[in-house]
Image (cartoon, rainbow, N blue to C red):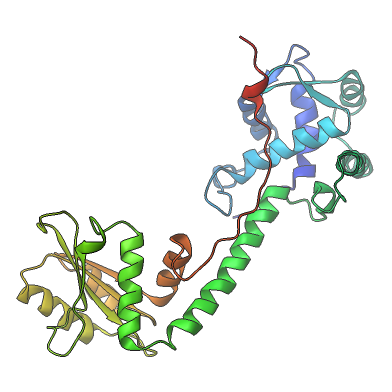
Length: 306
């Protein structure tokens, strides 16, 4: 996919889109008109944010509007309705073919300076300001990117710790994760069966109080990859219990043959490798303590009257 424009690259099209609407125009219309002016592909327009919540295109247009507002070139009339200030209108009229690189840089620097001044006025040292962004990526994209990098490091740390625990502790860890995901109807609905002569099943989860729906679990704390042979043995164990739902979780990976075999089984067999297990542990706070960061966002509804 072609690289998306930086938020600064949207200064010109946003100015030109707002210019014919002194009465104001809503943000969804702004995005639609900007998309038409920039000639971006459907793939670029629909590229998701790192978190998967929202689209990069819409986010960068939003930040372009915010920076133009900081620079005194745009303003909001009511919630979600934007127009140019008199200064912004003059700038758009003087540059009908778009802004030069120098003008874009000036607007960006002016917006940063005013943002930083506002933060300092409010007692902030300016380090949380968007003024620290230097590559044209919107600030909340930088936050999401940083979170992804942190998560990748925690995944690696978790896998390092997981392989150190005993086989029995790994089985209990796996059951803790499935319990945190809400598969058991309550804490009594989880049985750890891992022991000699367990029939290849390390845990059983009752999904309802009567135990009508069950999930059978096998946990392998291996360093080597799990192959088709091991998965076939698990399927055989499930058949012995007349089970139709099973989860095979490993601290390592599945071979391609095992994954292909699992995808073709008529019964519901779910394969979870080490990296996915670690990500589930992060998502459901098993063996991980989340650090909360407050990111303020304007609540425009608060200012609505009537």
